[in-house]
Image 1 (cartoon, helix red, strand yellow):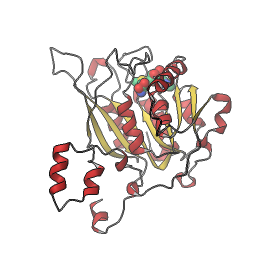
Image 2 (cartoon, rainbow, N blue to C red; image 1 turned 180 degrees about the vertical axis):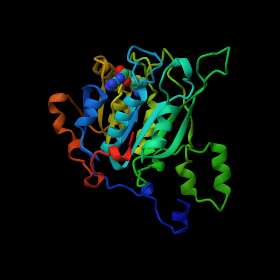
Image 3 (cartoon, rainbow, N blue to C red; image 1 turned 120 degrees about the vertical axis):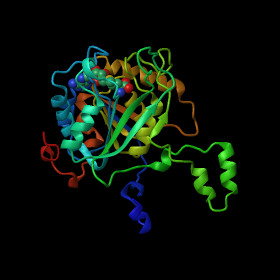
Image 4 (cartoon, rainbow, N blue to C red; image 1 turned 45 degrees about the horizontal axis):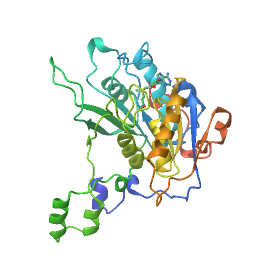
Length: 319
Ligand SMILES: C[S@@+](CC[C@H](N)C(=O)[O-])C[C@H]1O[C@@H](n2cnc3c(N)ncnc32)[C@H](O)[C@@H]1O
């Protein structure tokens, strides 16, 4: 990146991708095993995968897998295959789950990826929150991690869409500094790889009943930064349906799946909450349509295939 700056070049992540005006976004809702869903998708068709997997720590009935990394290896290979060359996968997890707690954690996935995958670790985002469980025998945990892997060096990053405003005092000082450009100051700053965002409390209005539901704010920053309007966002461990909700609000197409029969029910609640909260008449969300299994072949993912993406890459993700 520094070399590019000296040459006054642009990294692929800084180039604007051609945008069309979207008439509507399409959102597939599937009650499906993650691998079955992934295997239906064309290679090179997905811009962003939000991946919040089970970690074998028994937080719920679904959190139990034999031979964890062998199972994870299968969806990691498929994920790499379906990503477009500008695409990324973000994987949620904590590093605190050790020893007797279970057989899988983000550390294990990171170590597997380092040894076996060609995807690039762009950031390990620290999601820091002040509201957490108390502890007496160790330091109470206040962070989780989100590992961002890009499929290629040409990954998309919409920094301007996720900048955070400077506080008033800093802005006032910077505006006086003649070396700084006012338009850059107005744009705000890079949010960095440490994000302070509250976890959902038990009584949060966002909650739809899923045990490990992630906050909209976290998912929104990922969707805004790593995908662009009209691209496809995939979440095959969809849980509460929060990714689909954010994709609708942000004008992305989406494919959401979860093995649980409760998934469509949670998603319905998300859409109900969305209606209740969206009062911005000046910027209405792009119209959207939900499709189920029988209409799946109409999803834009089947039209957005990148011909250069290549075929499944067991070789690039060797066991
Ligand atoms: C950690 S939760 C995801 C929570 C979600 N990110 C949210 O914010 O609501 C993991 C989800 O994976 C689902 N799951 C477990 N095994 C699966 C499988 N083999 N295929 C698809 N989904 C699965 C579970 O039902 C659970 O909802």
